[in-house]
Length: 196
Image (cartoon, rainbow, N blue to C red; front, side):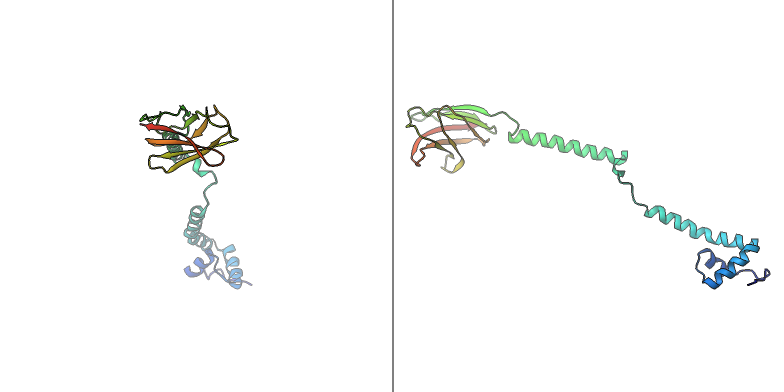
């Protein structure tokens, strides 16, 4: 098919050609003309410049961020700061709750009268050793720690004399450690004052 070189492509045709929005029949006719006509070829290229610029900008805008982009300094510094705050907070919380502190060893002895018995610091775990001397031998003794109102705040067991039991930290107050036989009979009670 021969195309007359004197008939140039109009601006609408040049734009459709640059944007590749032409039919197969038009494509053959336009390509043949653009091969021989430098003016139309330059006009077609310049008509396509804005479209190419838009496509390249869209490709950059839609390009996914690299997998390790959070390692960039502008993101890494705040992430490290947040991690440091969490670490310091965890240490402070564990110190506040007494989980990282060694238990305080307390020997519980039965006393008579108005004496409150042993004294322990508040907020610290305890290692309590009740005096079982004089009690009838038993396979196991049940232990209860109750507050002043008689509410049970901890329970445990002990099988032989001179054995310590671990008791979690408590707030300040007056407590009583009760020793029961394996049959449930109350055998002894010790006073314990937890102070600030």
